[in-house]
Image (tube, rainbow, N blue to C red):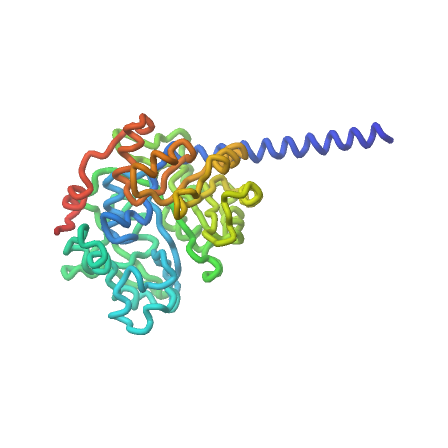
Length: 385
């Protein structure tokens, strides 16, 4: 009997060991879909142009970021909207266009109401040193816009600057795009954050379906060849690889749904919630976050710099990597911050893609550096002072 019990125990241990090895192998395969030392343009940029607008994403693309990062929510009438905050108050003129409703949530507005908002003028007021007259009237974007920009397009517009769109027989919006005359050939991937998914039932599946419809879902349509380079002929080529998208969320239930829907075959990152009781200096807190990430099937952890640049302590970085996970940190603004964290992380989510690209180049961690100043990129894109 003892021999039988020992034999069964040995088989059970062997089973779990093999299963862990299999899971680790799958995780490593998906992690390799991202380039090393990835430069991820946080909201396009919040420094050089109004965040999450066409100007910000065109700038990030032409600057040479590996990824552009966005936040997706949904309008009252079901349109996927690019917006970080739960309301339009901070980044648009909602207080002028819809007085009293500026503190109402994104999903209380229809898309045609959202089209009336100016997402550029508030930036000019708050950042006069970076202000440009042509930022005035920048749209609140829809989900599709960002992907078309990454393909080298821009929004097609009427002579007065309003965007051209129509509706099909079901009432679904059809948006139009055109080749961007200032496109310089970079093809970044898209880093998708599901913002407040608890407010948008089914948004994980909706994002999956929209990606498939746009031909951006690596699990649908034509199979992507292996070993496609992240850089091709001196240009970013991430959008043409298996790493073309990453999905991230602060929500634990949403993170699990993402992995179920994408079958663990698309890079996913669990973002650590910025909550008062989340003390990232405690080893037991670190361990619990790592356990959840592994259980959810994600391959990355996302954490922020913290108020005192303490969002990723060396011990936490060591634990994350020992578990086979990788970590990307947000959001960088200075070279000093980059110097502090470069040995601890795998990718930088940055407000200053220009600085981060050149920082990695100077460290010998990147093949290409920027070729223009940030202001010259904006000038070439037609954003006049």
